Length: 121
Image (cartoon, rainbow, N blue to C red):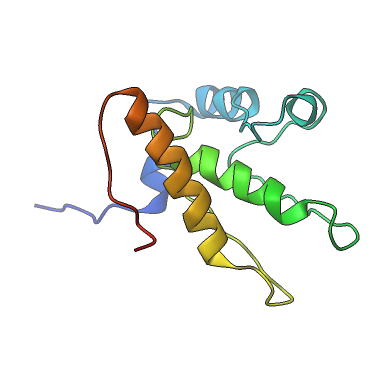
C-alpha cells in the first residue's frame, strides 16, 4: 500500500477536479472578512497572500483576526481552513485570536443549545 500522509494541499486540491475546474473554483471562492463594506470592495481568495499595511491603531490586526476566524470556524465556507500570520514586528497577540474564536464558537454552540467550557481557562 502506498498511502501518503495527509497534507495541507488535500484541503485545497480535490482529486476528481480538472485543472480548469480547480482554477475556476479558486477564482470564484471568496473569503469573508465579516465586514460587509470590505467584502464588497476587497476580494480575498484562498491561497492568495495579502499584505495589510497602515498606521498603528487602524484595525489591521482586528481585520486579520476576523478573516482567520471566518476561515477556521465551522459553518463558514472555508471552515477548517489553514491560516498563517507573518508577524514581522512581533506584536501579534495569539491570545486575542483565541478569545475571538472562543467567543464566536460559544455563540454558534449556544444557538444550538450546547454549552462549552472556555478555552481561555
